[in-house]
Amino acid sequence: MRGALFVIALAVCAAPSLAHADTQPWSVGVSEAQKATAQKLLEAGNALFLERNYVDALEKYKAAVAAWDHPAIRFNLVRCYVQLGKNVDAAQNLELALKYGNAPLEENVYTEALAYQKLLGGRIATIEATCAQEGVKLTLDGQALAECPATKTTQLEPGTHQLVGVKQGYLTRTLEVFAFGGKSQSVTVALEPLTTAARIEHRWPQWLPWVVFGGGLAVAGIGGLVDLNAAGKADDYDRAVAQKCPMSACNPAVLGSDADLKNQAETRRNIAYGLFAAGGAITIGGAVMLYMNRGRTVYPESVEKVTPSVAPMPGGAALSFSGRF
Image 1: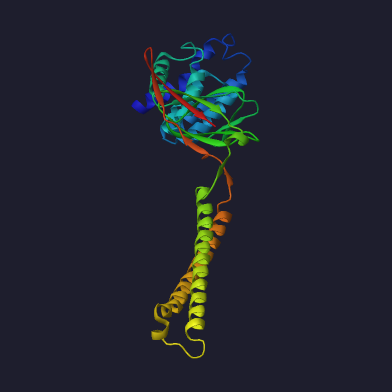
Image 2: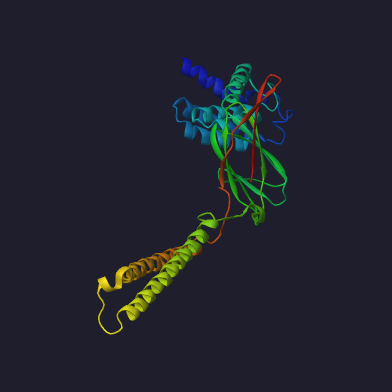
């Protein structure tokens, strides 16, 4: 019995306009044939709705609205969209269904519509995107939203949504906005020119490769000084031999303290060779670092997450978002 009563409630949705003929705005220009077609489609949709076949019922109601856009028929779209979890579509069609108030609706249907209005009000988020720069194109979740300068208000499901601003010669950014159900949120988009957004980045601090390169040269230079000292020691040894053993081979006893000059010269020469090798390796490493540390142009991250700020307002609060692109 309850199901039968619901069928009657659905089926009579379009009845009020029939009593007012063509004098009401929702009936102006609608022929009797169109009304009959709409009524037939409405009844078919009602039967499918009661079978919980909301997808097919929705198509019947859409066809009925195409024949006759009566607020009461359109309200059946709202019922289907709610059942299918498409709250945004439900809210948009509910706004059209209530365009003329309660005049085209039965009292119980109007009461139900107001209940849906309150229900959907808490389930729908609203984002107001504003941009002032000429030629900037905005997309929301991959769909074209507006071409700036413009202010565009959009209803959507609560959750994270991506607002993207694009213009040639400007840095493209994606702004991740978390939309709250029952709240209206404002997002201001301003793109930054590539010329000002770009920065030069190096792998290491610019001074570091030069320090390494210069350090290698310094080590090699120290090696040169040590080698020069070794050569001096070798010359001193040769002079001592020439003076003390001009006619025969020398032995340490004859040379005395000068005998150690040869060992000193060889030790310092070995140290010099080691410093030459280390200095050369460090210098080459510094040169490689200088090459690898060449400046490269980088741009800021293209994805920004925006933190909402809550501003108190009479009767509630408003959420405000802003992001600079």
